[in-house]
Image 1: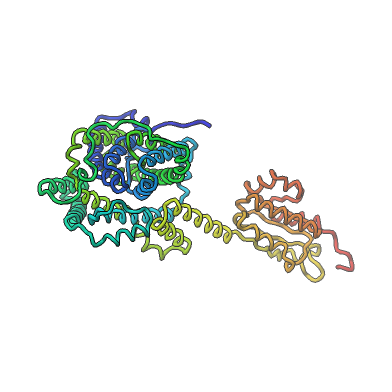
Image 2 (image 1 turned 180 degrees about the horizontal axis):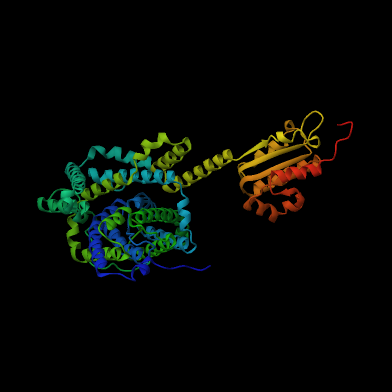
Length: 562
């Protein structure tokens, strides 16, 4: 197998202009400023330190841009990972989260090398919407603790236990924290709306999350508000480079982390390729999904070495990059360098950042990431679509994302099989124009031949429909013609059904003729030896030739029969 490794950056460098460099640098600065509060907020919501989120954005973001298959994809920690990361940390600890992230990177790298990028697109949109909305609800619930200032050491990852813990602590709301959370939320929503007004377009130069973060941090520091901050909970953010190290590993732990790693890899692949597809439509380009998976894999292998965790393509930051004029991976690389500079220079100021404001930022992200309008549109679609979307949604919220995706895919496959079996049909052809030919009919007027036409796909879910040809009520013809001109696909189970039909007809002294073979069914029938058993002379190009062959096979009626 030939391994293809061709980052999009290589396609962008020839003809790269100074004007585009200026746009990419400006866009990279904008995204870097936006990514700082998001990286910290996502990390804290995931149950890890804000420094872990920042270094994830720096290391993984640089690798995804430099080695990825998209011109404009921006990588880093995202809200979709929050429930997964939180659950891993709560169950296995932070050290094992790093191992699970590296394992997921290996899986993503293998998916890219074996060119599985296109397979991600086979996931139905109903499953994607279901788990996206479910993740949004899980993220929102996880923010209730910090939004209300509840003194809870850690929320349990299990849904009902989480509800019980929150309900038991609801009377302990910290009112200064709640006031700051509501003020931050209101300011962020108002700021984002005002930034959409054309005459206030200058507000877009400072992203809403950064604006509210700066204002809330300054207010907290100047007024000495009695609220929890990054400094009070985490001791601030270390200034300087973290030590590069490998997390401790044991075979026993490795086996337990395979399932969480697969979950991270699956979600990372889905989100990054969806983000790249959205970006393609905006810049009229086409990404390389396999190269993107390779970059995602390398990023997730490298980030834990610096204390980071899972990263993927970030839709919101990628869209911001496009709006800001970024058109090459240089913008994403600049965004990582901007984050690095801010860590090295501004890290001491991060101690004053209130957790309530970061919680408000994540709440807005959760609300915006959900496609809530899809619930209103459910009445327009089939019951199958509703069942898949709602099942995936509720299982994501109540149980687990992995289980939700598995259930959604299984339901999708079952409904697809049922639908395809419904579209597959076998109809008897009347042959009225041949009833007058004496050789074709018995004295009682019944035909000595029966012709049937197959439609659709003869596969394991529809092979039982061949039983109609053996129905005693269909009579006992001497020749059966099977017209396959409308049969587009045949699988091995369908082949077995045809072989059984041929054997049963031969036991009755009846001859089977097939006609109108398309390429795929015909290829399988020849390769399997079915045609050798049937006889080449009983394979005809069309129904007319098959009737002529039937006339040759039918012996003349005896005088007493006539």
